[in-house]
Image (cartoon, rainbow over all chains, first blue to last red; front, side):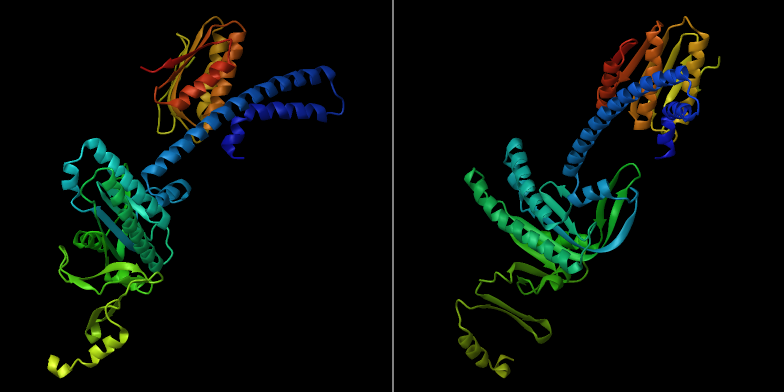
Length: 328
Length: 127
């Protein structure tokens, strides 16, 4: 029991001590005992009443606290919510450098599409889209950084860190599930009267970022900054409809589990060099596609083979028929 | 008899007394580091007031928008003294002022109103 708690019961302790002293005496004075007994009963009644009031008040506050927590959980990511509620870290302007995998998505030409939608329809549509996508983010353990209209920014690697490989893979799998879900949603929207199919673009990049609380002591945002953030955003802008473009570093972490198209070099705004990017296709374990990609930059190989159109034997014959001298 | 003039701080409320008018006012937020020590002058003033002004009515205004559990216990001790005083025949008024947005303060005021019958307990919505 803390000093404060014990001192607020100072009177109660004194009454109890007086009563105890009296019964410890060798000769017991009946009238004094009766007097103490009356005081004890009176204070016991008072204590019960006070305790009942305090418990009712405490229960009511606990209920409200739970409601606040529930509401707060809807405004911030699950991970951040857990950090705020259970974390022992101080809430202060503090950042750290960490390797993260960053995800950006948006709906292509959403501004144009939304310009001919009624406000109510637009908000219903946007909320339904963000709700569905957010459930997928939660499922894969991403930290939902923010919504920016129809755009979503997510990162993996903080506050919970496992490994760079796992974060990159989770992020790409999340994006693939979003892409699949969008196909379902496109049908649904078409059937309820949206004539133009809404398409997403996604960009993913892995790299060192500065993560933490940014802002002022009065108002702060838990977010990230860094080259990987800019790259993920630029890759998203460069992606085609329903495409996921990932950076070369992200690809290096997922290449054994996910099939991507051969890399392309992109000239992205804000980057003074050509950025190597990979278009995500599908998971290796569920590889039912007849397409095979052979890529080895050091040996100058970059091929897409469609085995629904050519057999392995025919391919070998074709390669054998190539005369390098003639090709030169 | 010296009146109380305690100015509010980050964690403690304003406390003022007016012996002539028989008024004690507590206003602000209350989560002191040491609750018993902070409120000790209030109990001393109250004890002196009741002893030295046997015929005077007493009005206590409490307007707290945040208070911790220790402060709640102190408020209950204070209310017990007021109730006991009212039971003995003196006019005691407790004005519990709450903000419309502050459900905790309103709820606690309602609990007190249920518990104390001898004093005049007013639950007052802040304008």
